Length: 260
Image (cartoon, rainbow, N blue to C red; front, side, top):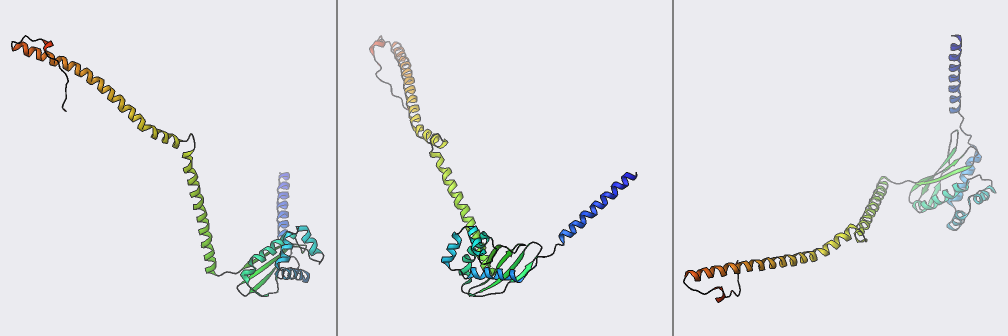
């Protein structure tokens, strides 16, 4: 009994310890936001927004580690792929913003894992924002740019995307139906066999009609022979009843015509 109580107490203490550790891990302090992090984020955004197309093409052609080495010489810690993606995203929206009027100071925020710096962009055509994300070592890991659109513009884009998706689907279905319809022209397919059977049908009908006519003609010959014998016998009987002695050799049945 005493051993069971000791085991129960041990389990309770273990559960309490686990809960305390979980609470401690959930209350990790936010990362410190210092002036260096703000300056690094501002410098990167300033560099991206002022990069011309020629310089941008050179950066995009560079390998990721070369990009990291380039900025490392100026004291920046940045992921090469993150910079190239951020630069490409900025160039894609550059015309949407129009002429850049100003870029705000960064709004800094942090949690236990990362620091974010949000820059608000004011352009001649539309507004937007750019978000820079850093890890615990103040290394830039993500740069994203987005533009602000009105509700009507978002609805228009959604409608165009829907039409494009439906159009693509119907085009693929039509293409597949055309391919399936061509199967009947392949050798050995059911369509070719049906076509051959259709071509052979008139010939078979003609052969059947010829055979039927020949059979009818042979039957008519047999019927005519019997009919000649009956007519000859009838005439002979008539001559005998009328007192004539002429036999069947006195007349010849030349032809028989039937009227239907």
